[in-house]
Structure formats: structure tokens, C-alpha cells
Image 1 (cartoon, rainbow, N blue to C red):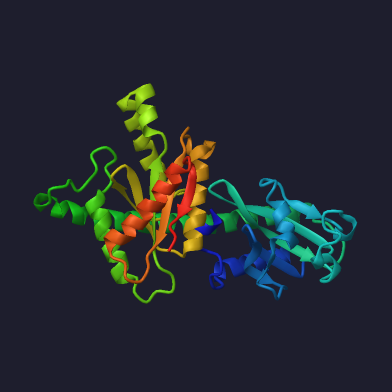
Image 2: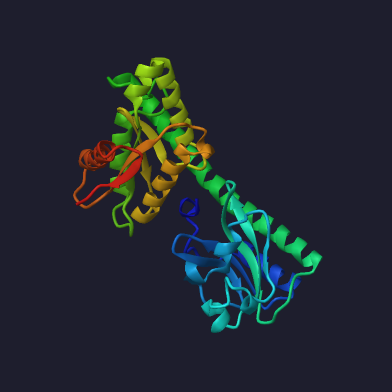
Length: 329
């Protein structure tokens, strides 16, 4: 979720800076942070009273706070708490007090609004209420960011579909997949051409993800073509949801294709999230997905890029499915 938001390492923003200023004032604390926690680090979207922009995750009080997403974590004296007594922030930076309220986006905890102090203390009830309120406000800002990204994708997708429908009268292949209503392979190849053309000179190349429902043939044999088609439509709906692929989606043969305008590391994290959600309760789908991922590279045309992603998808399928494989060189 955090990688999909595209917020890590972004410049300061007044809305978040205002929140930490209010948190510090309301809680009478010298340090306040909007802290976002990924697999390796905690990164501060906003901070007051803290010079560092990030710390390793192993030092993050917030990594403990997000384990209980609906309750603030209050550490009255970190030196007396075995979880934090040896933490460098306690031993070297003299952090004694911490209070953090988790941030929730799409129901998932991704960080906190927190305050720190160099003296042992606790929060008054009114201060805890304020910290909860500020966390809700920061969560709404992050949720709006996610929704804005999805609305932009949907707008571009509508424009793309309208363009493909206008070309449909002269094309032998239908512009839209009749089962899912998604643009088809021809549209995907056109989109790859567009991404290769407009991506020239960008720091990070675009990524192509090909996603396939595992066990389609077995599903049809056991439950019939109607159930297989229902599952494919459900996967299409899931992939277009706000918690799934933040890219323009199409149907490419037996797979779903999405072009992701993001670095390879973020695209891989997003694909892993999609695979995990598809197999869990969040997606309401008792299915697994195989995903092939390929970066655009110098000299590519749409066909070569698509073939490398297809090869990665085949490797994921041949290895038993339910995995993401990244195309090699």
C-alpha cells in the first residue's frame, strides 16, 4: 500500500507540516512526526524537532505502534521499557517518551502521527484525543492522495477506451474484451508504444505487469465455463480497484496487462501486494495469481517489451503460480 501511494521521498507539503506543528503544540512535545514505515526504514513526511529525514526500521518506535492499528502506543519511559532500552534513539539521542497513533489507508496501517520528548511523561486525556484526531486527518490526506491517483488513472483509461472505440470500425479485433469490458491486446500494444515514446529521457522506465489467474482450466473442468468466467470478471474488477494495480488495465489474451509509470522497485512491491491481496480476505477471491513484470529498456518496441513480460509470466506459471517473476536481461 505504501509503495502504491507514491509518497515516499516526496517534498514537504504544508498540510502535513501543519499537522506536526499542531501535534507538538497540543502535546507540549519538542518533536512531532508524520512517520511512514516500509520494509526497511521509517521515513518522515513531516517533522518538527528532528533533523533526520529517515531512520532504519529497526530503530522505529512506529514499527511497534502499527502492530495495533486502532490504539495509540504510549511509552512513558523508553529506558525502562525492554523493547526500547537499547534503541539508539534512546541511548544516543535521549528519547525517553513516545506516543504514536497509527495512520490507516485502505484499512492498512502504514505509519503514525507521533510525538517524542527527552523526559519521561505521559499524555493527558485531551492530548491523546488530539493525537487521535490528527492521525485521522493525516489518514484522510493520504486516502485523498490514493483516490486522486485512481481518478487520474480512470480518466486516462476512459480517454483511452474512447480512442479505441473510435478505431474499432476499421480493426479486425474488437476494441473491448467482451468478457471483462477491458481494452484488448491491440490497445495494450498501442499503450506500450505510447509509454516508450513519452518515457524517453525519464529517470525511471515504465513497467509492464502481466497478471494471470492460476488454474483456469481446472476451474472450468470442476465448475464449468460460467464459474471460470465469473472468476475472471472478479479478477478484472479487483485489479481495477483502489488497492490493486495503479496503472491502465487491459486484457491481453489469457492475461491482464497494466503499464505502471513507476520505478521497478515500486512496481514489484505493488505486484506482490496484489498477489497477496488476491489470495486473502481483502480481495474476497479464493484464487491465486501469477505475475510477470518487465521494465522498458533502450531499443524496445511494444512487441519485444510485451514478449519479455510474457516470458516472465510463463516462468511464474511454470514454477507453480502464485508468484511474481521479474524479466531478466
